[in-house]
Image (cartoon, rainbow over all chains, first blue to last red; front, side):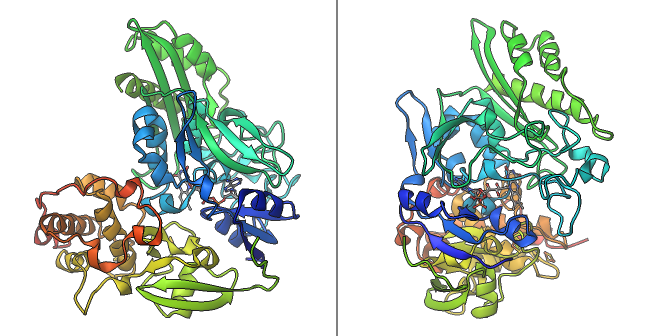
Length: 327
Length: 207
Ligand SMILES: Cc1cc2nc3c(=O)[nH]c(=O)nc-3n(C[C@H](O)[C@H](O)[C@H](O)COP(=O)(O)OP(=O)(O)OC[C@H]3O[C@@H](n4cnc5c(N)ncnc54)[C@H](O)[C@@H]3O)c2cc1C
Ligand code: FES
Ligand code: FES
């Protein structure tokens, strides 16, 4: 780990001001950043510890009936907040299926979507071709080991990795917004557009600018009929092979609104918009539901050894929909 | 903005197992390295040093965390409990006793982390069933695969705690509230009373 200067931010304006210095990074829970610094993925010369900014830990109702989650709220606290559990079960479930009990006591909800790909080439200690480590160096993963875990949507030959966050899949499904502040002004970023796809820039991870601070996440109207399903190689404490978040509304016995997002299939949570449109008007449990979900996969493209992920993702989406309808 | 130290050294004050410690260390030092190398508290183990194994689990302001992922600098002013701080007056903590009774280890390397994790698992109320215990203890890997015995030990300790008037946490460390932090919703639920269906001795024999 390269040496750095450690600064503890006491106020939000102070944190933003402090982040104007070159090669400065915010430190929240530290569960990603410390590992990056050890591997050499990042070599910040300054860390601004935002962990004690008092105003960013709260979960508060919004005026339009939603919830605002402060960026520094710990994953365990968000998932087990009674309002989150009842109004957004998909979000609570996605969080509790992430990492472990002790990691979720450190990891913050603002830091979670900023986590990076788990691709072994990206995380390698030695030099390998990876456009996210050294822009322009290529993508060793395209024909390399572990390719069965990689993308089936939105990949290019420049990057085939997937975004591993579980909570981000629920946030995309719920059309949540990520709220930021910056010395030059803040903005609201739709959770569906937070992560950068490789056709735009294979070296980028997300749309945050240097020094841009996530202050919170806003959830809209409650989605009590929602569920998250995570498929992994062991029962707990493992990243997803595929995951699915679904939220539904049923009016007069038919589906009146459906939102479905897949996780670990692309460099961002992948909304199945075509399937969502096809689901409207269908009777829950009818055979057409399967066809409607399948229609969301017309753009899926497998790599050399991950074609299994297409039926797996379809079945995971179907299961999440079923659970959401039962909720 | 407080003092921006131009030097790579930083002075950290911690309340460790009830006693105040002040250490000047390299700014890159993790809480785990500070405990082990500087305070000679080697109970917390360094298994992977990247958050994957749970051998380094300690309590920070009463909550279980991976000490290898905490920068010592960011723990400044906070309370830390390690496995060395669990026993009171030479008397083992009920969870420590339960691990011995259930024979919940083989090589013992993961055990301090398992025990620190288990104390919180019980306090959080995540012991309603064997399955729930296994889920909420999944952040602690056991290379010797003593999982059935570990889950049985947690189940037995939870049952003993539920039937005991004094909560497990009463004597082992200051309540999280004492540090000004809400124990939050993790502690908001009452510990589920667990029937002691699995007795320690019933699963204590390894194949
Ligand atoms: C062993 C292990 C298993 C894991 N398993 C899972 C899993 O199954 N599912 C899952 O979803 N995640 C998993 N994770 C990832 C974990 O959830 C993330 O590391 C964590 O959420 C990151 O949050 P943090 O607060 O620790 O971020 P940090 O490590 O503090 O920061 C990470 C990055 O985010 C930036 N950042 C943090 N907060 C802000 C902010 N408010 N504004 C702007 N930038 C910010 C930092 O500058 C840094 O670049 C796992 C991690 C480990 C170590
Ligand atoms: S040493 Fe900290 S989790 Fe393995
Ligand atoms: S007892 Fe050996 S690692 Fe758990």
